[in-house]
Length: 80
Image (tube, rainbow, N blue to C red; front, side, top):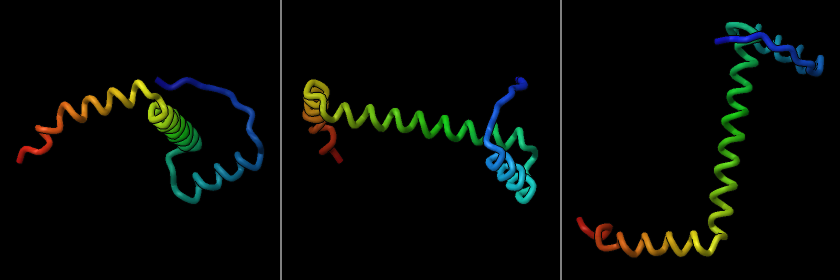
């Protein structure tokens, strides 16, 4: 479901976005803005996951669990 929203953005950004939509034969400025927001949200979620994984690497208890699991599955990993 689409809803209308009002935003204040820099006039240069809006001009560039309109030009991009026109030059690339995109469906509409609204579609371009929605796609851009979706892509940025995806990047932000990926950054959060990446940061969480980096933090987990410094967590002694988490790393101990990882090592325990690796050791438990080592015989299965060696099977051909």
